[in-house]
Length: 423
Ligand code: HEM
Image 1 (tube, rainbow, N blue to C red):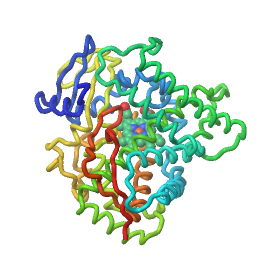
Image 2: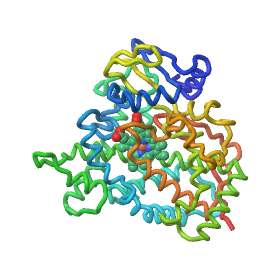
Image 3: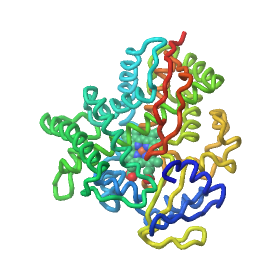
Image 4: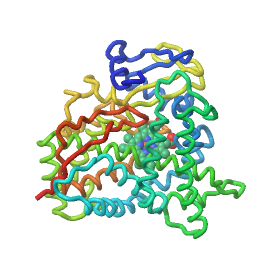
């Protein structure tokens, strides 16, 4: 499981069907593989579960941010943050997304070899920094990016039998602490700058700074730090991975790439994509949907039972885990024809409406569904449309791209491509 969780869970489902059990030390966990069972856990009985052990073990990093907090505290933070992610608010970000993408593309040259994953990571980080915190993290992008990478690596201790407490000075823990400190320096600087100028930039940070408890108190720097780190982490690597996998899939599927280019040329005719253009880019939309099916950046999820429950006749006791994997369900022939084929066309005839609700759930579901869903899809569309008009990518022969199932699904060793200007 630790070496290759993707194959491990695929095999579990193939061998044992929709419900199976595993035991790690004295920790018992179920692996479920049917959309209705997942819906029961995420929606109908959501109150009986908290986030899984891995997220909880990483609270030193995420603190009590949206991803990891629970109960009333989480609900309050979610209500405070929700307006910042509303479609109307997010609309204003499309221009920034296009502008930053154009700036990146302006530094590219024909025939150059680049790691497209690295490029997408830096771009997504700059976009999150600017749109959510009105901070230009260009100067810090490399350092913040590397630190986030390191922390995510450390965080992904999937399958470890023993989670060593942070105060034990293991090499891993020392690296984790140093990483968090480096990141905090940047975050606290952004917060201090904003407090000093007292401005309202209409971004998430302004909203969180202004938010008041019933007793009139404001969020502490620590609370702001937790939410900010969470959004940096949840909002940058996920979208960057999705973009990287999409470019990789396009580079291997010339017929799909051709249709993608034809649509861009027809709808945009060389201009920068605006928010109004996005609904017209229907093929791009299906392309993204399909990319998130085959390479879901949130490839698996887990919960911990805090109340007794029953799944398909099996008792789930308090303290038991429940896990499920988008990677497995999205590739299940019960829901998708030729499931391993990359076919954006499959979404053209209303498949999304015919599927059981949790046969396709790249953004999770229920009360804890992704708050950045609209943001991510808008960003991915704008970036794909802006770059796709100007460049295509040829994979560098001999460079093997393999998915690494860390907390997110990312390309191990990046994706080396040769840049080719279009037309
Ligand atoms: C393709 C991109 C993305 C994917 C596939 C994705 C996927 C997910 C999934 C599956 C969850 C649920 C986790 C769980 O229930 O255990 C989640 C939660 C979350 N996501 Fe995303 N995400 C993406 C982009 C973003 C972006 C851009 C942001 C912010 C700017 C974001 C912020 C969050 C937050 C804060 C949560 C926790 C929500 C809560 O529990 O209230 N995500 N995401």
